[in-house]
Length: 266
Ligand SMILES: Cc1cc2nc3c(=O)[nH]c(=O)nc-3n(C[C@H](O)[C@H](O)[C@H](O)COP(=O)(O)O)c2cc1C
Image (cartoon, rainbow, N blue to C red):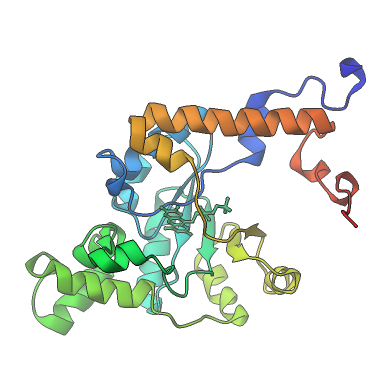
């Protein structure tokens, strides 16, 4: 029967190329000394798009270099300063990040008692702020505001950067046009959980949505245990699982994964 299945002859590389991307995970220096660069390299070898977080512990330039010819996307924590937003988008575009992922669901950090007890927030100590600290516009604004360089007071610079990228203030749907003006490629909004928001995203001109709740993902734990190889082991497991599930369901690509393959649980 397999020969007659529409899924017959599908190849894992196609699934890889067409249907997956590596979730955006910030501050990867806390997981492995290779920071974002090890995972960007691992993804490049597998042909999986690597998504660089705005809260990265590597710069846009370092990751582009580690990712080489691999596909890469950029995830934006939308700064509340338009000049800085334009600068970051410009840097990412120049280095061939093709898709912009705009995270909408991080109004505040989760309630993590252990982190609170320990006062643990790496971004307040210059860890995960590398996109900002390497940005020429943030540099000049910081210098103008405080009369010193970022390197002279990392905790102060960290606080200023956090106020810009995780300001707790919201953007509105009509502001997507601002991003479209400065980002010619596809724009995907992340953190959508309600059908009405999905419709609003499409109406605002977004090209895609990522339904997600900002929870946990296993690749990063594989990365923490065994670096690039560990990340690839987990990624291959996830991809094989996806491949098998699609195959068993007779689904060739994600376009075919539509309402017709879902059964309502009344
Ligand atoms: C340690 C960690 C760091 C994360 N950092 C970011 C980030 O910088 N930007 C972002 O948009 N999402 C971040 N996320 C959320 C993930 O991208 C993803 O949405 C989440 O793990 C849920 O997975 P799912 O979307 O497959 O449900 C992070 C998640 C974890 C566990």
